[in-house]
Amino acid sequence: MNIDEAVIDRIVDEVKKNLAAPLSKINGNLIPLGVSNRHIHLTLQTFKKLFGDNTEFEVMRPLYQPGEFASKHVVTIIGAKQRSIQGVRILGPLRNYDQVEVSLTDAVVLGISPPVVNSGTLDNASPLTLVGPKGSVYLNKCAIVASRHIHMTNADARGFGVSDGDYCKVRIAGDKGTIFENVLVRINDDWKLQIHLDTDDANAANVRSETSVEFVGKM
Image (cartoon, rainbow, N blue to C red; front, top):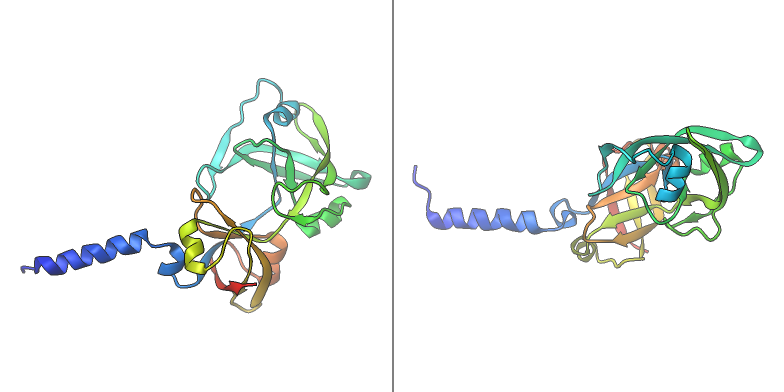
């Protein structure tokens, strides 16, 4: 069967438009969800103190965002009155600051009061001791509860009508349907569209990573 070349050209053009469009335009107002468990970001210097000078920082598996990965390395974190959580994984790549991201439930277990802030904001972060196989490190300001946030590109941001640093609302459907406010917009063209909730927020809405949330609007 012969197909008109003009029809083929229109189909190809439409496919190209869909591939180039931000995910927000293709899937309406839906944003993929990523549930963020407790984890650690470290400098090379701190990593060497915990694991030894001869230990290489090794990848276990890639994460959703390009270039980011879960490493093979875990440590124990210790808070006030020697309360601890074991097996907290270090994420890569290594950074230029030390940060431990926990949930509010984790904070209660550890006996600390970390602020709810954007990643990298450590002025009022809580102290913890990190213990690895080759040593321990006390970090005076390292523990935070990360703000709810959305990673997106500039193209996605135009589709949603938001700018970097804006706050928005999202809705999660289901038997414990929930609207989350104060969700921070973070923009970088190297990122893929995804919202990050910690385990407390995800459990409150009874969701896992294999779902999407609905963008409601800018606050």
